[in-house]
Image 1 (tube, rainbow, N blue to C red):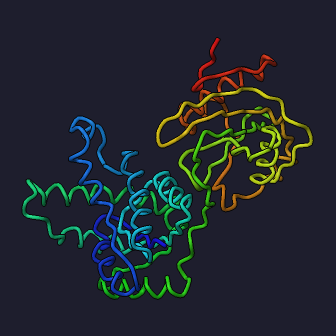
Image 2: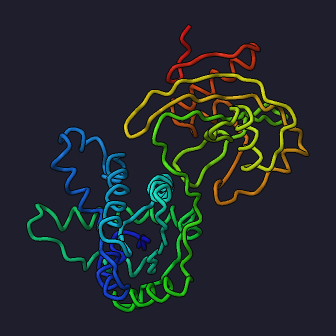
Image 3: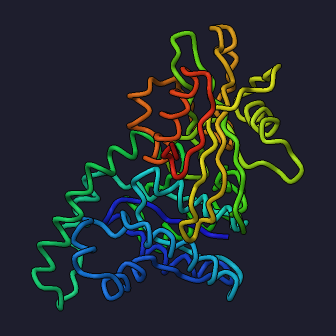
Length: 346
């Protein structure tokens, strides 16, 4: 199990985590800041200067997942992880990767009042060996108050168990967290445990359209980015039938007819991913009554929406958007297309 302590910079995550491991039996502190520091020695300086925050590096997020899994395999028990996550897509990627390894996460948010947060930032001790450290570290913390406010307003409080540690010492905060974890008041993150593939896969997506010919996209909780309804084809399952099954499971819409194939896209292996075949089918147009029957998001989906092709470009990763773009062209022409990495071969 992981107890992930989230919060703004200066909220007291690390000092609370040090107290917490004394209260939770067989627990270990894992600070992902260590990985950020290691990357400064592993990656070329030019690569590091291209991002303002190591959390934006895919390698950092991957190493956090892999290191946490390795530590739990080695030590067992509970990992206490103090780390700020303000972008929901980072939360999805890291927590989804942990869920894929059957590792449960209990997500706690330290949420002191902003006036107290600013006082703590002003009084924060800065390592003396940092050049201009006091100015840079404090300014970094102040600059991230606004993103923290945005996260609070959009997703963070709905996802994490809040603890107002403004009037509390780190020990008192740790006691409150330990009691909430022990009693079950901090629930296990409601995220689908989708095992990571161990070889190339075949996945089927289904495009569903509303009466304005906008296409349905869904926002999974277990990975970053928007997607089409669909999923991995199970052993012995016909790809079109897999798409029908996934649509029913994710949206509650039951398709009567086998959907028409639009594109077959070969996704090249990109370690640690294995790639494979990605198929998109035309599930047809939903009338307003059918669209209203779409299920509210459950553990697997956070949200859904009908979007235009232009709007989809802002939501989908580039290769996935190219797959959609060519699927729409195939739908217009009435002929399926074969793609490689989102590009037609002819």
